[in-house]
Image (cartoon, helix red, strand yellow):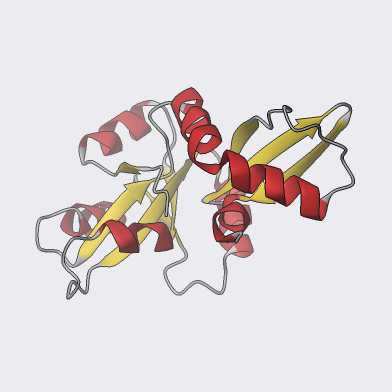
Length: 170
């Protein structure tokens, strides 16, 4: 399972405040389970997404409201800040990721390299697109509410697919 996001580092807090992106949304992060080297680890994997506007953060939380770890965090609230700092400490019981990728181009290239057959199978099974054998299906990525999506285009048509649907393709 591909894990594209960065670890959330304490230094990000000051930078987010500097950029006036004071709102974080937390949610359960399932993609991290397979990278945990200790099979007996009971750490809770979380994903933080940042927002400049409270309204955007509320939309995100509303979209994931069934998640028990869905919450809006205000980086200007001292209680919220203390909680995040304690979560980032070694041995806290949490592993926190940040919904950013180091390079979108590198991630797109990685997906195209490792998932090109699955992408092509998906297109053949789920669309009416006519692709020749030598047609290359190049993805672009999109992040929405902490979820990675693949955008595929063919001619004037495009489709948006949850990346996990491509991964799970047999």
